[in-house]
Length: 263
Ligand SMILES: Nc1ncnc2c1ncn2[C@@H]1O[C@H](COP(=O)(O)OP(=O)(O)OP(=O)(O)O)[C@@H](O)[C@H]1O
Ligand SMILES: [Mg+2]
Image (cartoon, rainbow, N blue to C red; front, side, top):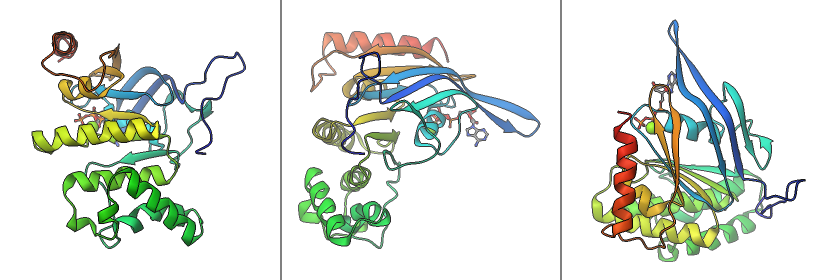
């Protein structure tokens, strides 16, 4: 799985890692049907950092959960490397807001859990854990338990755990929502560094326009009722990005205009 990189399609063009084509999602709600997502079309390249923004209830988590394979699509197609997503898989990892670490396992054991569960020999799983502990800068804390870590460190363990499964796509649903501004800034930097090093495709849901502009290659904007994709803005600013810069501010105004007009 890890060795699958850009594979040329038959036409000679590069296949997107994720290809979401006209996807609808409907939920039965008592006697009614709720359309959570309507005609979502989105192509994501290997290594792209996508931020998804939109008002509460517009279907951001639903889209993420369908990519993760926790929910099926009602109509349309959702393909990874050209194949329909039919359920959860180690190639797509979700980082949960509460990080979802096992409290009774050490950092190393948490990271080795996936490889062990998938039948890798113990020594090999331990070597994988060492590699990713180092990648996320937690070598000193390899034998620590989750309760001994800060929020930011837990976040890094959660990402390492996803990477140890050879995930190529990392899904993050408002992971920094509950954090103070300083911790949030540090984690944004950490995440960008891990993303660049591991060449991941990241889909990151946030309510914060500024966070989206700091992180993303592309900001995808959704509108409510039913959720639709109304804009897909490429952020061409070099990183690290300066939130006080003129171009940054122009983007901020543009995106809040898009969101505001759909509240
Ligand atoms: N399992 C479900 N059954 C019924 N309706 C659902 C279910 N999951 C989500 N919905 C509905 O789908 C819509 C989109 O929900 P979703 O959680 O994707 O929104 P969101 O954009 O993530 O919102 P928030 O920003 O508040 O997290 C909502 O109207 C919600 O009530
Ligand atoms: Mg949500």
